[in-house]
Length: 390
Image 1 (cartoon, rainbow, N blue to C red):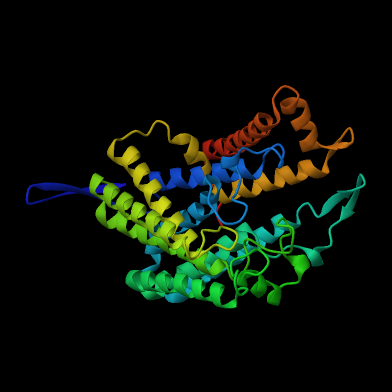
Image 2: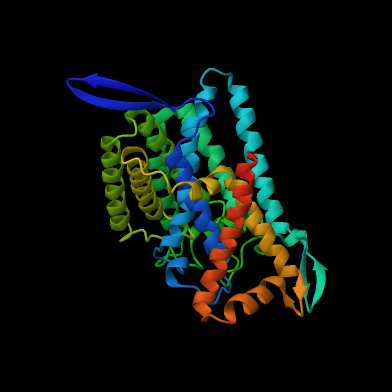
């Protein structure tokens, strides 16, 4: 990464100018941290024995686990602030082709991950899945749509316009959720506008059923405010590029982050912080924590120059999509491969973890070991210089 030392009125300021092919280390670390946590919270040994910090809030509320997904969207936007520079001198059709192609690829991979391994166990027998009842939305599908609309907004409305549109989206979403939600309890699980909208588009069978009713936490309407998480990451990336990796940048990022965290908590009084319906207060809160995190990482890595610890997360950050997909593929294969009448995952968990640990510790250690297994795969890929992009 090329650096320029500029002196003005006796004050030295370092501005970093990323060159093509070079990486932003703090971004890689934050991306890797989010992927590592996504794998960790998605693969406990048992879903019934999970320590509280590794659970999502049941409905209204916030845990550290609820920060993982919006942080990844924030990082997507942050990376866009670097990758989109190459389109400045190219025709629009080149940009649009790239964005739409990447959106379709990520969305289709998400659908594949939902359908895989195309069979399930019923009474010990393998049965083909009915793909007509397959869940349509999901984590990767939301990432794809947020990337698409975030890219279009920042490309054609520039920085100031993107900020104004983001504020408008959050206020509009608040109004939609209040006006079209059930009278007296518009943000309830059964009566929220996000569920009502999704049921206009999808059959109940095509929605997630983990909440005790057909409701998708990555539904279409609730994807609207999630776009703002991507735009916020882009704005932060532009600010970092202009201001440089220095302490002034760090304290401004952290100060802005703390202000947004406070704003999110205040907004929570009238529009509850809620991940499943991705409320505007939740967006503001998670953007705030994202700014604090990236500021802290820039301070540790670029200002203090403590970099010896970063490689673990760099491994996850260099092949994030592939590692995330493989983490889902492997665990789903383990669910349909049976050993002695139990799923492979259940057999491994019972014999190698639960046999000598308490239920909560065994469940956590299984998740940690699985995350480390994904890290080893990423480590091998990095040593072979294999980087899979879409």
